[in-house]
Image (cartoon, rainbow, N blue to C red):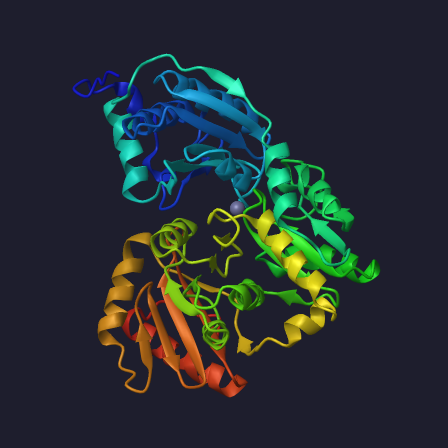
Length: 464
Ligand SMILES: [Zn+2]
């Protein structure tokens, strides 16, 4: 392996630094993210992977129209470093994670159709922050290994499906509606669930990178309207929705109620803790306080963590937690599975739990505690100000009757409710969320936050 570290190559100067982000690389195709750029990123990734003694890299892509040519450019860059490329083709992100410890998934996730991006895992670790910045600097310097890699293709779906079928057993057949929003999960989800003995009503399971029906993002209630309708019309037991690359799950009960991920996590936590008392369970700062209580009551160890799938995966590894989850819909099973976020496997575990309950899903979830809460509220703030703002707020906030949690932004817990404000890692926003036992308490906490925040930045615009 040779480096040309001392040669500053002009070519790297064409690459926009803005596509290199906190958890991944993402940009508009043919603007920030050209074939040339993706080829150079491939060179940088191959070089770093080889330096970590990884001699094979798995690559996959979602169903976007730009996927095939960007995948070709990526492979070209990787192969030029000497690393061997195994292309698993069009599959959901979790199948790429499943295929090997070093991988690149080419996906725009739930972003508009003209976007694409790269999720990178090296020797089992998600590349983020400094690791992603290092790729950019390497491209600027033209600091690449050279060699001649081999290219081959592999069909990973049979192995993945077999592994799930060997692990998941439903106590009774279920009737389910599956909405893939024309994302890449449509390539595998309907067949997988049918093999688990479910009657599957597919909704938008034809992969179409233009997303002609609704956007493949189950965290937005409007994207679940078709699913709710189909579940009720078909008298189904449950509705499942997947995001564009199949690593986030949305859930709708037989009665058409959306169950947000922190309450789905409660059900998973109870099921796991019944078999594995004392297990640790990790969740992000946006989740309900009731989740903490449910885990404690079931004899588990609750651990609150920073938001972001790479932080969650790192925490799962470091702690050995059996289960993890985020309000965004990423679920991580390290109990009977590998610890990475896998919405297909999470859906199977949900079906397994529901199949063992005599009651319908609506009753199972109604037995879990609930309270009045807000969705995520985004408040615009320039990127260069957002983290400084949070630091100022931490210093100035004076709430002696509350418990302050500062692992990611500021979560302030009162007796009957809590509020959160954190800086988004990926957008120029502050992200807020509130939960309380009564509407009056919810409003009181919201007003407290608003006043404290406006003291620092009078120009912030609040929707409440
Ligand atoms: Zn995703």
